[in-house]
Image (tube, rainbow, N blue to C red):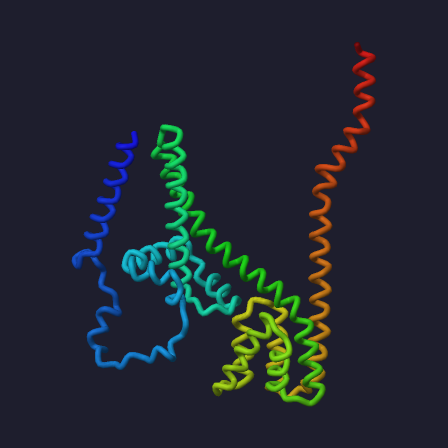
Amino acid sequence: MTLWLAGALLGLLAASGLVLAVRAAPPMRPVRLIDRVAPYLGDTAPPSKLLARPSASSTPFAVARRLFGPALGEAVGVLDRVVGGATSVRRRLGGLGSRMTVEEFRIEQVVWGACAMLGGALLVGLAGVLHGHVDVVLVGGAALAGLLGGVLGRDWWLSQQLERREQAMLAEFPVVADLLALAVVAGEAPAAALQRVCRLTGGELARDLDAALARTRAGQPITAALTELAEHTTLEPFARFLQGLVVALERGTPLADVLRAQAVDVREVGKRALLEAGGRKEISMMVPVVFLILPVTVLFALYPGLLTLTSLAR
């Protein structure tokens, strides 16, 4: 059985290599638009790497991308067509403040799925070898389950990262709003007030605001930078706060009054979040009461009576 399994694995590897070789041959390989246009743009000077945007190419996933470039690109295309949701992924990546693109995220999903598929197949195969019988169908099912689990697990992990970041931002939001209102009331300009708040505080909100201020120092108007930040963020109260700040700057509304009103709204949002969290905790606290304490109490109340009835029946 072990020799049969080894022969089957070798045959599978040989068939996979043959399929990849035939698929990558020029008659079967699709010609991309960039390959057609590249010869006519050969005299264009390459951009400086100092000005290049950091991306996932500097991560360990770049090794897999360079080793399995064409196959990985086709797998990313298939995954994007099957799973979809590129808009949701782009929104969550923007909410995280990540420079990763959707294509790079899909590459990570493919790598996660491949690792989980190999891990599941090897685990079930080794368990079958230890028991003296290897079920090929079970190994294939474990590999497929690992593939789906890896792909969906990377998406779930992205959602968990965004949720934790939003919770941290919501906890920091009231303090940042109050400090910004105090700085503006004290007579500072909006950009100077934002810079002071970013310098005095730390966290996710300060990092986002500092990135917006960096764009303003590069020449972008502060209203455009704040509007761009409001479009990228996934925290609705923070987006409303930025939009109110932009409207006040564009229309000449007294900024101190606007910021004080926004700070009050932020406090109300924090109170509502605490009330909602308390309601969820109250419901979760009912679970041990209903399923553990109450049945034990009923058992203690009824057991003596049941014991007496049983003795009388005898």
